[in-house]
Image 1 (cartoon, rainbow, N blue to C red):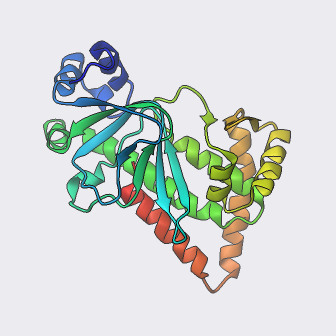
Image 2 (image 1 turned 60 degrees about the horizontal axis):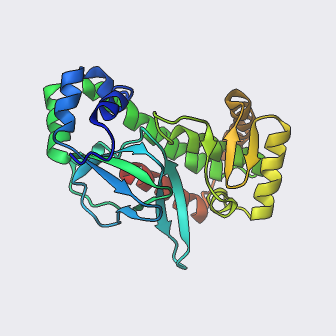
Length: 265
């Protein structure tokens, strides 16, 4: 394994993640001997759409963006993943290629566990299966939440749901509750203009749920942000019961959410 980071530091890092914390020191060290640490520059492609899933990827440092291209050629950021995030375990069990691009949104270190090694790890340690299942279930829930918050009309609450989803998917090794995205990226994800996004974030700031700096938003009060979003979720469910037809936009959102879950990091 390339020594861009000290092995002892990587062993300790793995010990903080839900799946690998169940392995002892010797087992984690033996696993690292079969892995490779990759250094990724900002905007460098980690995995392109169409690539096979040959590895389980773990973000050690930095951030990775899941990016899709719209029909008119615009680049759309679907999610940002931080330290502790892994690629899909489920993808290791089938031969379907990746459907989204994974690109470094900052200089990053990525640990690659060969597919065969990752699957053998599960076979050797069956107790890890429930942990992996919980991770994938949380990922699926986040994808469904993405669909739900896109249907919320009140923008401050829609943005609140988006920020919670981004935080949930940002990784188990995150050091802060900061979302690093440009206003343009966030506006596209929230399906609104930059001005509407600015006004929505301003209202969330007035509630004490977030604070904003250039190029990033810090979630200062997670319970408060959840409370603001729950009001929108309640309105959403009431609206669904009143509607008898599902719009084309809703169908597209649902398909995108499910595809994101099946393909996501």
